[in-house]
Length: 165
Image (tube, helix red, strand yellow):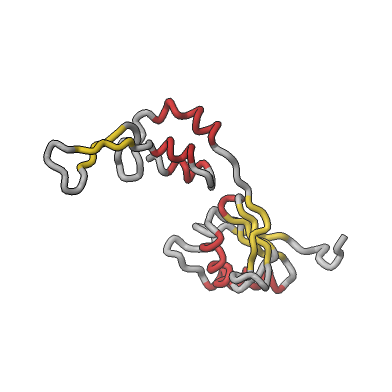
């Protein structure tokens, strides 16, 4: 057991609405207290729903370099690594196949629209370039739901469902 940090705390901070104000700024008081805790030997880290790319700049603004960061609502854990371009490398990436969940809610999504507001099912007509008025090529269009199920790389159920709105 490491006795050097026997009295140290792990202080895990959220970012949006906690460490950052709604306008994206960080108060001097927050920066001062985060740095005070860090200087006292406590491990101050960020645990957030944000991606790694949007978490690391906040960490830099706070002026601390914790051993770990938790991003993407716990799906990604970063480990401090001086050799990595951002100073952190991916230590753990949690993913899952949402197929079973998506299949179970499919019936509830009959009236779902994609992010452009289009209905996500069926076929649509498309006129070929240079074709006459009666010459319409019809191509099958996969629904957002079917595209989500067919995706080879799934990053989480929320992202898949966002394509169905």
